[in-house]
Length: 158
Image (cartoon, rainbow, N blue to C red):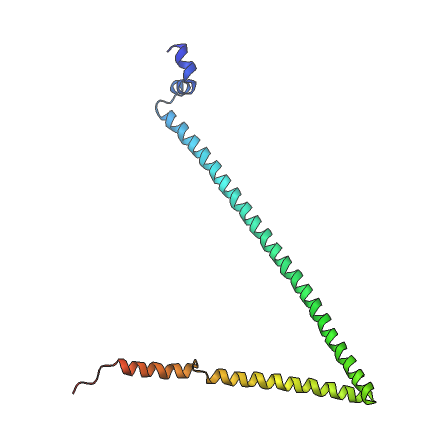
């Protein structure tokens, strides 16, 4: 072999000159493929690990957001309830001062609250009865299906 051939393709010459015959070329290719496969496997593993970490961070961020919303909602609810209580107390004291005694104001406010609770309960109870009597009730569905099945049957042969 001349020097010109070795400078153009030195890796081929190096593979040809190694002991072990024609199988050494294939063995080196297998080693390269194995190394590349291992590198690819490592990259995929790293990508999956990063994806899992990203998912955990996303879940933690969502949990923190829900937690903050719940805290703000609880604070608003407590302040709202306190506001309603103080408004009712103010109304009761105002009515009591207007009628001459605070007890009358508290009695009227208590009566209005009970009356409102009764109306809401009655409205809810009547609404529940209407739902049970609606044509979408399961028992009526069964009756309608039975009627449809009887219509589909052929008349009895004599």
